[in-house]
Image (cartoon, rainbow, N blue to C red; front, top):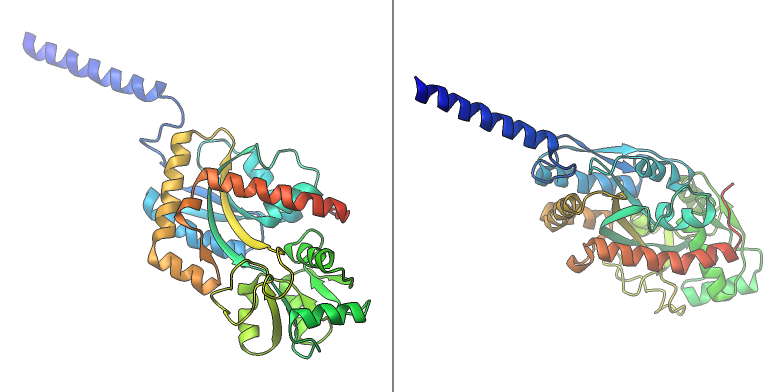
Amino acid sequence: MARLHLARLYFVAALLVALLSAVTAPPGRTETYPTRPITMIVPFAAGGVTDIVARIVSERMGKSLGQSVIVENVGGAGGTIGITRLFRSPPDGYTLVIGQWTSHVGSGAMYPLAFDLLNDFEPISLLSIGPLWIIGRKDLPPNNLKELIEWLKANPGKGAAGTTGVGSGIQLCMIYFQNQTGTKFPLVPYRGAAPVMQDLMAGQIDLSCPEAGQTLSQYRAGSIKAFAVLTDKRWFAAPDVPTIDEAGVPGLHFPFWHGMWAPKGTPKEIIEKINAAVVDALADPEVRKRFTDLGHEVVARDKQTPAALAATHKAEIEKWWPIIKAANIKAE
């Protein structure tokens, strides 16, 4: 009986130690992370390129992490509403965001923000890159970029370019193009990319500079002209279209990249676990195929690190904020 009593005491003592360890364990321990679904904020409306990128990556990440990664669209104000939501979230790895140039570069120069885009979030990884390209209506007289620049200079006030509003990548692309080529033409704001393309193909406007993957089908159908991709190498989806360097405006690069962030203070161990899930997702052949179908390239493995995202983000802000401020572009 004494031995049985002693065994029970040992059992109770061991149970108490285990319970005490669970109660006093420091927050953010990764042995159990994640124990519930993760929210992936997309700071734009459903159906756009960023939303598609987020769903491709989140679905595959869920398999690695053993929990669902649920995409939540929190659009508005150039992506700043969704980013503010992340800023106010606990740094526990259960709320993340996938953003891009508009939400994480342009917004900081145009909106009064309650946070610092570079220092108030934890970078996780770059994801994919897709080009912007300069396109025109199919019956526009110029047939290449050199002729387009000459035509714009010979016809001041013509060449109306459709954009998706103040601070959009399309608008900055067109302003950047004007600055680099000494051309001037009117910019016409629209509520979205779809009406821009409708009016471009109808001949109501002349030019635009959209994310190329969204307009590839129109190019292949001969409904639009493509003058150049704003990258330093040709786009795999339309290899016949020259780069902006080849077309005669060297250095006018505007890659449309996506990245992932967590709230500031998220434990390093959790960041590492999320990053490992991202790396695993981006290596999956089916994921890579879906990105290819979207017209995007998965970033190289050495770019799939928090440090690489931080460096790219910093370089983009240093490049674009002076351009935005010099053009006096402000949120309305």
